[in-house]
Length: 168
Image 1 (cartoon, rainbow, N blue to C red):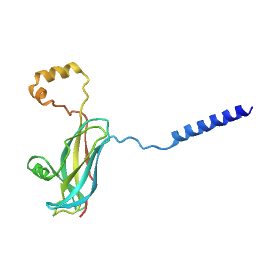
Image 2 (image 1 turned 60 degrees about the vertical axis):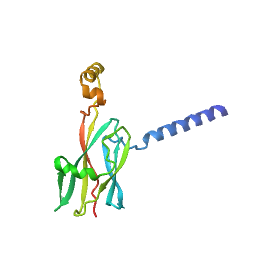
Image 3 (image 1 turned 135 degrees about the vertical axis):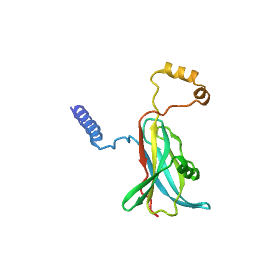
Image 4 (image 1 turned 30 degrees about the horizontal axis):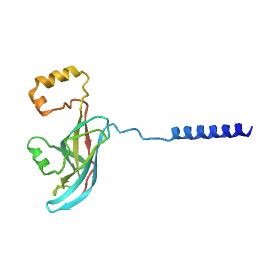
C-alpha cells in the first residue's frame, strides 16, 4: 500500500512539473532581422557607431543598406543610399551583405557631424528555396555567370528594418 502511495505521489509530481512548464509564457520567435545600436566609439579616423544586424529568421537573407534617416521638426527625412548617395557606405566598416539563419554581424558607421537624431534603414531580402531541382540545374548549366560565380537568388519576401534613434 505504501508503494502505491509513493507511485501516485511521484506521478502527481511529474504531472505538476510537466504542466507548469507549458503555462510559462515564452516569446514568439522573431520573424524578421533586427538592427541594433551597440554603442559609440572613437578611432583616429573619427567617431563611429557600432551596429549589430542579426537574422533571427529561418531564411538566408541579403542585407542592403537602404537609407540614412534624420529627425527634422518631429518627422524623419530619409536619404536613400543608392546611386551617388551610396558613396557614404564606402566609409562603413564590416557591413554584411548576407546573413544565414541565426547569424549576427557587427559593423561600424561613421557618426555624422552635422546631424541631431538619426538612424539607419536596411532592406532584407529572403532567399527563395528551390522547389524544382531540375529547373535549377538547367538554369545553372545554361547561365554561364551563375555557374561560374555560384550565384544565389534572393527573390523571396523583402522587408525593412531600422535602427533605434541615435542622438549626439
